[in-house]
Image (cartoon, rainbow, N blue to C red; front, side, top):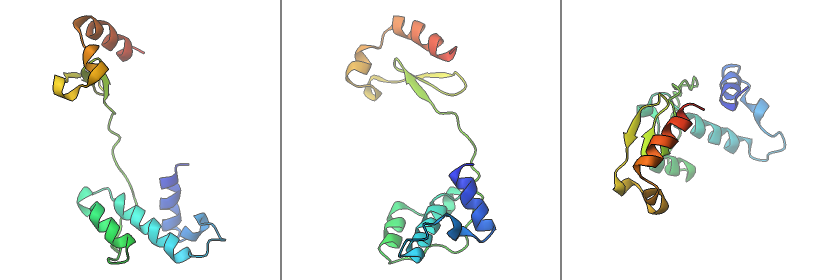
Length: 125
């Protein structure tokens, strides 16, 4: 089971303290940090706090929002990788990167031969 799934289930069961170290002296602070984490994980990005807001919560200047969504459902987005100066997304599409996006040895390795041999090899693994 994933940590977020366990977290969601314990919130739904109103048994969040089951996943907290019983010997912790400041249970209230632990629960508050869990609420901050849940606020940062809101599925609707418009409901997530800014980093400056999180800092204010940690400093005790602002309260965590009360109406949190604990579903944490987010679509899985294929991760893009960079191969020899081209960005390859999870679907195999490639986008050439400009020299300004490359640096040092990455730029020196960029040539037609590298692109024609490296990209097919990685895509067919």
